Amino acid sequence: MDKLHIAECFGAAAAHYDEHAHVQQRILDWSLRNMNVANVSGDLVAKLVDLGSGTGTALPMLAPLAETVVAVDIAEPMLDYAQSRNNAITNIQYQCADFDDLTKIFAPNSVDRIFSSMALQWSSSPEQLLMDISHILTVDGRADLTILIAPSFARLRQAWASIGRGHAVHSFTSLAQWQAAAANAGFTFHSNSDVFIDTYPDFLSMLHSIKDVGASTAVDDPDTPNTATLLTKRQLRDARSAFTALNQGQFSLDYHVVQLQLSR
Image (cartoon, rainbow, N blue to C red; front, side, top):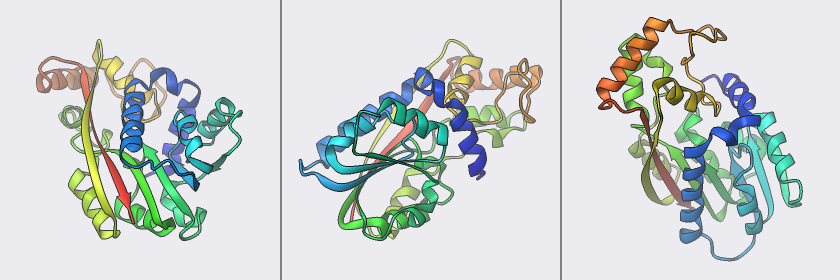
């Protein structure tokens, strides 16, 4: 997985991310609601980390839960935007880093709570990531991780595969694989799952809903030649036809998510 490319794509989307991140906001609201119901005891913890904090939408809700909140994101422009919108909140620190390098950022047993929404699906190794989370959490630490899982975007992937571009859509890790990784990392865990459906007026709008929040694939309008993975108009038309046949003529994307609630 090309993390530099991921950082560049999300960084480029920072200024307009919130304008387009409608389903991501719905999922974030769901994540925070489940976290508050299941895990928040009312006690202030020393350190809480938001992994893949993006534009910092969750930070005002997380800040009252800890003495220090650390916002971690791989894209510097995302952190800049998050800091500008939350500059009145004094207990937030900002760290530009890859969440696949957690043990280089945080000492063992140094983090009390971890929150994440719609970021960890980009991990290079879910198994190692959860091992690292276990390593940095305190003995009574816990984590609430909302992750996009298979079979999200499955029909879109099939449509691209029909024109030889199946690689253009990320293949997401399954719920069973995430649960196995949690068990292997020594966690006691509970998982909540849901499906969020986003609908669009046409095929290009649907594709741009992914690209405009930085989750870039090899999906580009042939009238805007800005990548080496440019599609021809015929390929785009064929992919559209394949998708509508698979999706009963509807332009919609299924976001399958799980919130893993982990404790040591």
